[in-house]
Image 1: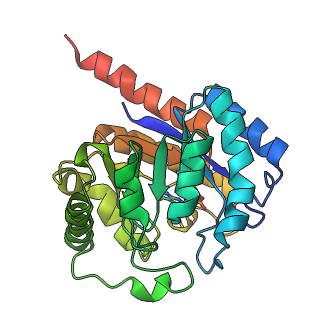
Image 2: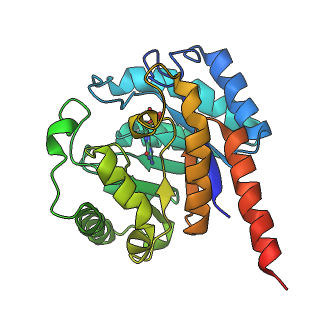
Length: 267
Ligand code: PMM
């Protein structure tokens, strides 16, 4: 059964919650709500990675996320820090985070692998080709699944060179990051090829643009939660390690259906 990672973006410009939770108290309240809805992990991020987003200085990123992580960890919530900055990862670990979620897979900050090696934290390495400002131009693949797999494998080898224990590494194909809708669907259809790298897999499809294409043009962002939940069920069938979602409640329903069907198979 996949772990459910609830998304807590502590950014004023996050595309999916419209900056609704940019204030510390509201962010903490929302983090606790995600946990109460059944999130196993709350993923706290202070830098938007939406297409075209500008970078946030690490000090500002930390100012946003550290008080939130401290409060959630104090409440016993398992927290991951969504950051590309090693410095922020260290500060988050001190504040109580136990997982580093790096959308750049270690490519954005040359200090990241050393930092991960020096901690006993889990490390989620996402497939990434460049920052949000340039990623649209980097979506060129011969075969997206083969290419993403090969690039994730390169990352894994590099991590091992730095002394990172591969048992602590989770890989993520990075849906929507330098990928078209067609690329995302191919990756979701062939998750077994990514699993064959031997690491657990995390899927982050929640509310992404390619899901919006399935809906009427005027549909609200939250209307993408149904499609997200269906993908959570598909991901469960592919035995992924985790799904990263905004709406935990609908994903819980989708995963309950998976569980019931598994039970139904037993004679
Ligand atoms: N997507 C976003 C941010 N962080 N982390 C991982 N591991 N995988 C993802 O797919 C991912 C991520 C962008 O989505 P958001 O702005 O809605 O959080």
